[in-house]
Length: 222
Image (cartoon, rainbow, N blue to C red; front, top):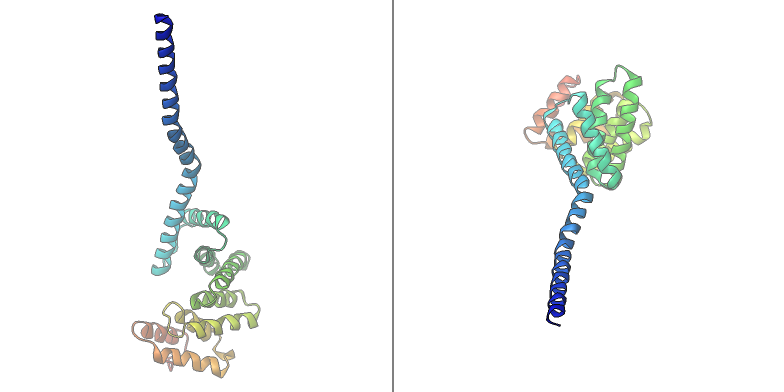
């Protein structure tokens, strides 16, 4: 009886230890599974943050990235957009990358046009998601200016940008560039809007707009 009791106690103790070990192992297993499934998404998020930072740096400093870096950032942002299609900033960043390539290839329409069409589509998506963003509307107008199509849509975007960003330093240079390029076809109201924006502008925006006017053959705008 004593031997049997000892065996029973030993078996019970072993079973208890095994159950305890299983209970302790379960959280670790769940954590491992979570890490396994979430690690790729986490790495993708890190890459997207890096791509956004790089695009912001290039935009702020007028830098054109090399083809490999351009493609890597475009792929990261496109993947992010597939997971979150309602992100206006992602549309803006993708559009900027396409616009860079399109504007650089204007002498080669077969190369430039598909790039600018992609840029326009993403800029329009960004404007739809952020309808009060003057810079988004200005970018839509600029893409249409380069594509040389749908004048009514171009001026619709131009007027929206002017209305929402009459003093915006990220909006007015784009509108001035478009207006100066198309000065002969500008109606009096749009000419007056550009003159008024220049008169209101504070340094350094004022100097930037005046320089665009000089380079555009309109030194009287100052």
